[in-house]
Length: 419
Image (cartoon, rainbow, N blue to C red; front, top):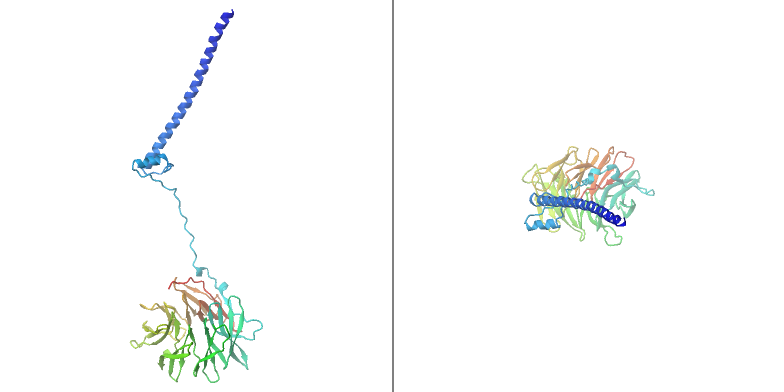
């Protein structure tokens, strides 16, 4: 019995082992089949991407520095790698400074200190961050503009300058880094004295006499060490004078006999002195005479129209078509071709390097050369009288109320031109 037991037992165990082996083999085959299928799919995918990249130039996820990309180079086929499309956003355009200009916010006012006894201001002139103007008060029932005051734009501080009138009034102050010049007017007998003060010596200098004037009160023009003005020297004669302030030598560069051009002011600009004269070739038009300050060379410009009070900034000429009447036209010209009318009804104007400022209908405007646009720089509902422009600062008188003299100014944020 015991023998039969062992003979019948082991065959049964070997059957169970064979069945277990058959099951394990099937699992391995299944796994290998799946891996083979995945490998096949990967190969087909890589092959497809290879064909698309090399022959159809279609971008795929393949790396250009990978083995497939390197293989492509052996077939002399360009491996195209197209970057991921990226749309560059359009930059926000920088607004033009004057488009955001607020006349109300930009205007400033010359304010007298509480301890000043002056109530009247006139003839403001700006240089850098400083404005110098005449100041006056009532003396014996009449206004006497007998002092000069200096206003610092940055600090808002106003001081009296240590120069007093020897006659009655101090008019037309102009200055630069070296000189302060003004006209000491004599109202009782007319005329007066042109006075100059050297200001770059580091000490307070006394005013010196440039020239005695017998008739009228000439408006003074300063450029470097040179001073120019038009002066009446006879009952029907005017002359244009130029003075070298370093030597006090004076020369006459223009003479007008019974001529309307004797009432037109000379001007400095771009290193040149200019003034209007009659055009001998056209009695209805004017000639603009031009003298180079450095070389002394003279030139003539013929715009083909009448010219009054011409100004020049080194690139553009500007002038009025008549003697400050309400229907006067303001012209601008680059020296070639025909001049053009910028505006009608202009009483006064001033030329800067980058713009031209003018008064019209009780408002002050600026025309910007580089943009060709015009902007109002005096606030709405403010009645103004244009006084001038210097060092890029536009100055006017607020005449909305005439209880006192109110001088206001503004610096338009105009980009510097390249001329």
